[in-house]
Image 1 (cartoon, rainbow, N blue to C red):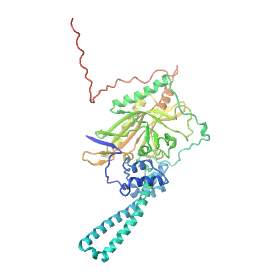
Image 2 (image 1 turned 60 degrees about the vertical axis):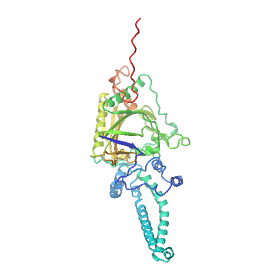
Image 3 (image 1 turned 90 degrees about the vertical axis):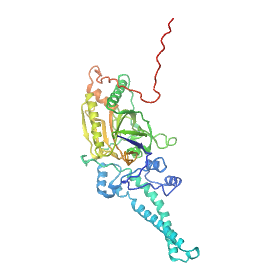
Image 4 (image 1 turned 60 degrees about the horizontal axis):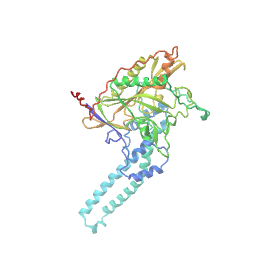
Length: 465
């Protein structure tokens, strides 16, 4: 059974969407002028949609409207940028209800005027009280609509500016924590070290070995390897749940004068086929972290500006509601299998609400024991984002033609630098590195099945003399 996955470009109506795009009222040029002149919180994803590059995110506001207190409690438990009082400010329905009523009134007035015109001659129309009343009501409705349309646009931008920062719902088994997250301050920004590193000789070979170990392990399990770009627009960041403007310590931006709204990252936009309602890909890419305001681990490999990692990414259907939860458990099992093969001492943590981040419905961290730190250190994580990202980026089409939101799951197979720390400190023996502990992976058979198959003709037999 196969279904089609589309990124951003797929268009469809859904019953759960409380708010619809407003572009029916204004031209693209008027919208762009409005965006340039507006102030306050800006959303790259909203701007990206209004400019016509993609559809507006189809956010499910049902829970916000019907279970406001539950949403407020979830926002407060997450300890994120948004606060509980911001939830009550996500209001747009009243204005749109009035607009809808006035538009229906205009239609009714137009129909009544047409009926009067059909019954009467032009000379007597101006003397009919009901005709003049209809014209007056039409003028008043048009005047009021001209006042409401700009207000709707302004509220629309404010709505998406707040609504896009709402976190995903929390899994009922996720624990609640009341203690605030420890905050670190750093006095002199000029003293922060480079946070970059070189690997040479055996260290470079170890990084390559870990990368190939993870890729080969996952490819044998049916994962499709991918190579992805390192540059993305902020709209895609927001679609995945990252707020670039609010997380400057996590994002590198290119020169805004030459490359506006372009950041370093790694992901993909395309259209796929999902077999048996699950798609699993694996990618090795370079990750970038600005780390401008943490002041933590300014030396060594633990917290650096750039590093390589192998990431698992899964897309599932949402037919039973359990597909993504099951896939997350499969990803965690694969992580445990690989770290056990490396003979690392690790523990799996079911993360509390304030550690989930915006997109995660449930998240697990895996920490390995690092003797040099005399503590555990995070080497991997896995998250079930349910339909949080798909409401911003992905739709899939069922066999009956209905559009539905996919669920997304992601997990780190191997964060190279931190895994190197755990391996070296756990297995270090004289002289220094000891024996090689990563077995050479078995050959992964690959077969080209595309067009232009190469069929070399047999070589001619030597001529007899």
